[in-house]
Length: 399
Image 1 (cartoon, rainbow, N blue to C red):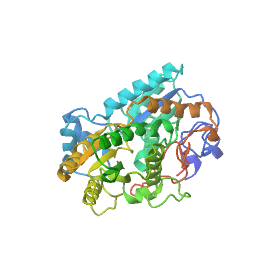
Image 2: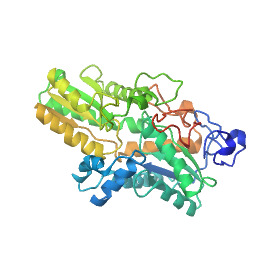
Image 3: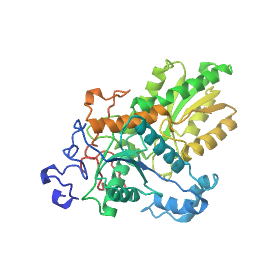
Image 4: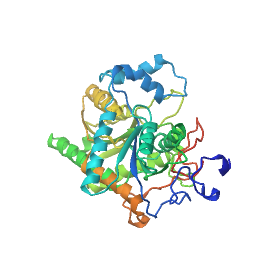
């Protein structure tokens, strides 16, 4: 595809390497060290139903293009129906938006926060229309996902591009995106207190370290997607950047607490939804709990490392199903908190925005693992969706 067939960026044709980018990011540098005067922050979320009548329409949005009948969607719908048809995710994003606005105001930073979702109201297209109505043309994207994979990074970049196309605003609005923040201290350090408190609680109950397991859990994804997460030219192991990033943060948490080697830890997965014939990342948390219990484990600290808030996969898959597994096994399980609106997390997100506002040099950007700081502009082919192929995506080098 030639540059003349791509949405106009307002830049010379030879510079149209990153779709819908600001001039500072358009050349595709790994880290953009040039200050940019953004007009607003564009908070992007997954979205969720807010009543029983919303559940099936929401699930149709989530699975759009896959031809899944409503009867099969109803098998997943019972998770939401168990909670009155209301996903907590929209309320959590409203709280995060308010917390970001308060943090920005406290620092004297004049950046409004717009919010739009992938799968439910308010949609990203709504947020872009609001931006246009308010005269905002230069936005910095902030997605509610910390790690690299198709669904947690590239799909949000595709969402930005799709919303710009749907609204016809691609010739007027530029969107950059903050780097994936899995190892930014504002995000990573929020897990320290939870793990520390859980271990102290279990030890206070008389449990020996040999009987305790710390399970760091995240959403499972297809193995093919995991292998393609992160840049193509960076070998990060069989699980790609997705698995490597989670493992690196888990190792940092245990090392920072001085617990590395004292108790057995494991990175586990949850919430898989593909057909049995399709390999997904394993082990499932419930299978891992059974295996550890068979080898003598009496208690588990479950750490939702891959999640930024207590949304449905946390409330159902951990607080319901994993706790039921613990009860069946006759063992104790404690689930540690997600970042939510923890002040360190909120402050860290603002810091990530300011990196791009101020053009902070790469060497001065904080990262708690050797994998970061991650890229401002995603690399070519990063986080490919094997089933759907490459679609137009903002904030990254083509394809």
